[in-house]
Image (cartoon, rainbow, N blue to C red):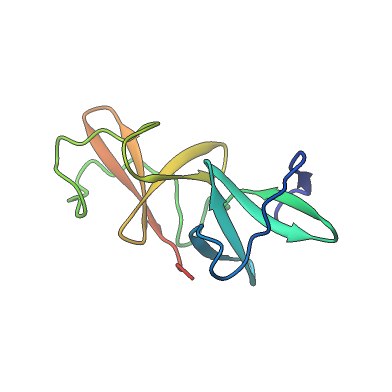
Length: 115
């Protein structure tokens, strides 16, 4: 289960049609917003991260054949893909999958359910 971490003041209301990508997470929908995974909860916004394990491992996958971008693409701030908190690191959303920059290649950290 996600740690209960409250996001600071937030004047944007997340929900269907809000303009942010929704991701199915632990039985509810969270919304990607500026590298954060937000969940409306009891009058405030919680910060969530996808758990490592199961369908979303954090392993190095040097044999991953990236689709959705050129092989030379390097993920990071401003790369054009949305940042997704995953465990204690940041992955990038590419065609419904989590990609993680690794030395000389891109790791596949598994699929996510887009809403």
